[in-house]
Length: 93
Image 1 (tube, one colour):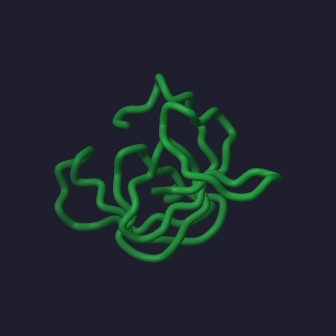
Image 2: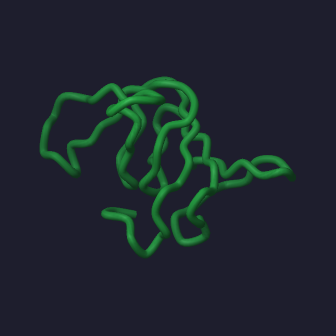
């Protein structure tokens, strides 16, 4: 499960307890808990639940490849994501 990063350290992050601007760390094999933007790292993401495309997509910080969707799965590496939507507004959770 992804971990929310705060001044007190890291804790498990689930979509209903996330707020806009929370920072979460998502590792390979974990689901992205909310819509957001990558602020650190790069990873291969399975977006087939959203797009229907079976080929993984590379997502990385900065540029037009930094947006991620809640409910998609990180397949490789580790990314740090800033949540950009309140939990009630995510496409999939």
